[in-house]
Image (cartoon, rainbow, N blue to C red):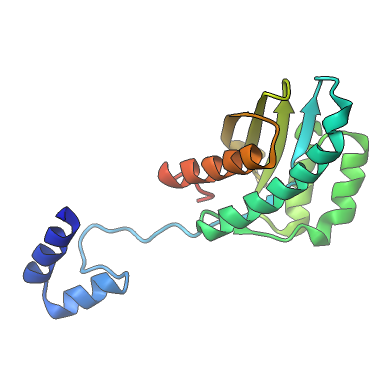
Amino acid sequence: MATTTSWKALLRQTSSAGLALLLLGGTTGGDCAPAEPVKSIAVMDFEMIDDSGDEASVPAQRERLKMISRQLREELAQAGLCRVLDNGPAQVLIDRFRASQALRQCNGCERDIGKALGADLVALTWVQKVSNLILNINVEIKDVASGATRLIKSVDIRGNTDTSWRRGVSYLVRDMAEKGQGCR
């Protein structure tokens, strides 16, 4: 009801030209600064830290890592937080680095990957499994040019299921959007 009242008040107080600008996403002047352009990001596939000793879950977890890697890219793009790049052109480089170590521990190799893709930012991603009940999903966004960490996000999830993993990634992206923590 309050939204309807607000729109009615806006309609009464705004000229037709001003209203058209507002509805089309423009401004009618004032102190509005232009939006900073959305930066490009290379999102690395999720990696797993699992010291639980639960070998039976490994095949399902591998599939979940692929699933949430796709999901994170899709949701970042859909939310307009980042311009997500295709990692394909640098896949040989990614595979070479990953063959010797986890990307989150490669001492700057993520910057080489980002540079190869022409990215402004690179996201390192991993899931840490404490047990089948307690896991956390992590995202660290780094500036390719400087190597500085721009954002670290983490969410704890309960349950080692497709649903809990999906919900965890959705929460991270939703929280980034609500707090204005995109790739700007």
